[in-house]
Every structure is written in structure tokens, then in C-alpha cells.
Image 1 (cartoon, rainbow, N blue to C red):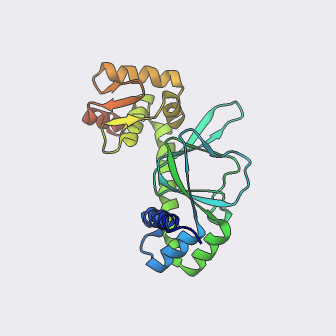
Image 2 (image 1 turned 90 degrees about the vertical axis):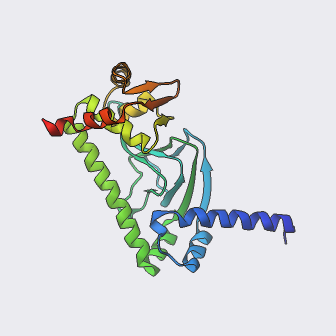
Image 3 (image 1 turned 90 degrees about the horizontal axis):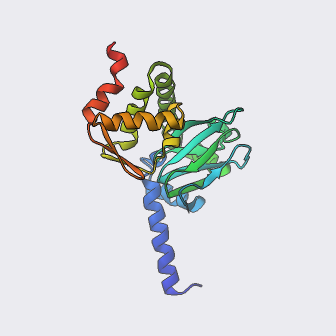
Length: 237
């Protein structure tokens, strides 16, 4: 039996884990007893920015639930070009789960920030879905949102110019904030289907126009209304 201090630390860790799990979209509206069971069968881990969570060819059947930070899902073309499939925010699910049509066989997942991630096995997930249909419904909603985002990204690359795509992506990365941190020109280029050089040149144009300010490792939004207008420029033609 552990010392009282060790028992106290274990309980604090368990409660912290429960708090994070309860904030996940896929676990909304579950009872305390259900959450206790989910806490028991899941593993919480942290990873540093830049770490690959998996790469093409990995076959481990686990589901990742992103709790903190951002994760980039990408694929590599035969000519060496990297295509960003999605940039996942907290609450997103990803990994190798055939029953959910989720696969990591041809893709790579990389932490864009320091991340906290919950890991669940295929066996435990299948059992949870069988016993609690609400979880299955929440997962469907989560994946449907991913499909809508991918469709929007494809439409953007098909019909918008690089400045329009870049303006849209900057606003999405910033969210309600005025500053974007940790997104390199290379990563932005992979997200909008443009080269790093093109992104750097267009960002310079935006700065000259007073739309943004560029720092060493961040981008500051200075004229959000103008960027928003630029995003919809194609729609107004």
C-alpha cells in the first residue's frame, strides 16, 4: 500500500484526468459513473511540440483524443510534397479505428504544440459504444465536423487565390485572438497548398498593406475586417 502522500497525488491525478475527459466533445452528457469507467480504461499522456504521434504504416489500433494543444494530420505525396489534411484542436479524435473509418496507415500525426492526449484501445471503445449509444452519436458529430472542414479546405484550394486562402487560414488559426504563435511559413504553406516561398512573399505583402505584423515566431492580426473582406473577395465577383 502506498504512502498517504502518494495516494493523495494519485487521486489528484485521477481527478485532473476526469476533468479533462469530461470536457471532450465525445463524452458530453455522460453520467459520473460512465466517466469513472472511461477514466479507468484510458491512458493520459503528454508530448512535446514536434513529436510524431504516429507515421504512415503504423498499425496500432488506438483512438487518440486531443485534450490540449494542436495536432497536424498530413500525408506525403510521391514527389515529396507534404499535404496537410487537418489541424486538430482540443476535443478532436484521430487514430487507427477501422470501425470509425479512421486510419493512420497513410498519414502522419505531429504535435504542433505541447499536447495532452487521451488514448483508448479499440476493444474499450467498441465496448463503450455498445453500452452507451450517446458516445457513438457524439463521435459521429465530431467526424462530421471534420468532413465539413475538409470539404471547405478543398473548396478553398480549388476556387481561391493564394492571398485569399492565406487570409482565411490566418483568421482560422487566430480564432478570437489577435496573435498566431508557433505556425511556421512551411506549415502554413502545407495547409493552403502553396510553397513556403509564396507564403513568405504574400505575408510580406500583407504586412506592407498594414493587415498583419510579423515577429520572430508569431503573426499579429492588425486589420481583421480587411482580411475578412479578402477571404470573401471571390464570392463577391
